[in-house]
Length: 126
Image 1 (cartoon, rainbow, N blue to C red):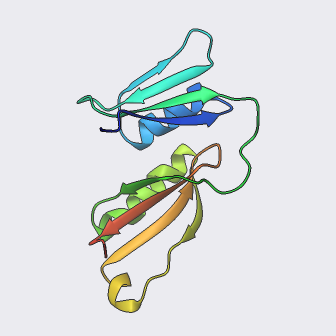
Image 2 (cartoon, rainbow, N blue to C red):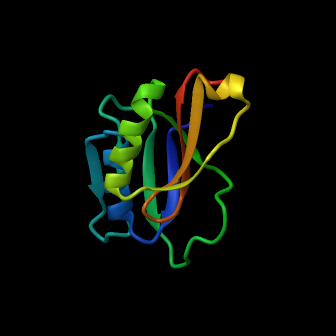
C-alpha cells in the first residue's frame, strides 16, 4: 500500500489548491468545473493534494498535518517569509533542548484556511 493523495476538506478549494501549489512549488493546479474540488500535483507525478468543498468551518486542531522541510537552518527564515507572503501565519515554534535547537528548528504554521502544517529545517532530531 502507498499514499496516492492527501484530501483536505475546505471552504474554498481553488484558493487552497493555489496556496499549496505555490507553497510546494507544484505547477499543476486544476479546479473542477463546479468549483467544488481542486487538486495540486507535483511536476514529476506521485502523490498529490486534493481539496474538497464542505459546508462546515474548520473547528479545533488538525488530527493530521503535513510536515515540510525548508532545507538548512539558513534557509528557514527565507522560506517562512515566502510562505507568509502567500498567506500562511505562524502558530508557534516548537521548543527543543539546546543541544537539538542548535541544529534543528520546527515552526508550526497555518495555511489560508487555518490548517496546521510544520516547517522544519536543519538536521532533524528523529
